[in-house]
Length: 131
Image (tube, rainbow, N blue to C red; front, side, top):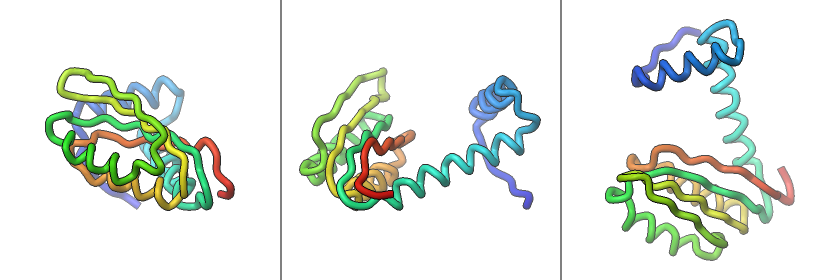
């Protein structure tokens, strides 16, 4: 299937450098692999059951989201063990260490992904009762 998408030039240039450095034979193959990794990551989060331990790492524009972020952190305080926060100009990087019900961690991740001011959300499930 053919598709088209809009990608900032700088991001596409970096993507091309990356797949070429890995020795892949085409941009199409690299995109298929990237999509597969994204799908697998989503399924791992979706299939988690019971109590999980996880890290949620995300970056965001501080002034555009900080009030909403504080509300979310209070809403999910039962699942958030601790956070680590660093400033990089107008951007911030946050690591949230969680332990709680898989459904609650999923909900936290999806809430964070809803914000335009959040650049990327990465989740690592460290422990789960079931997958």
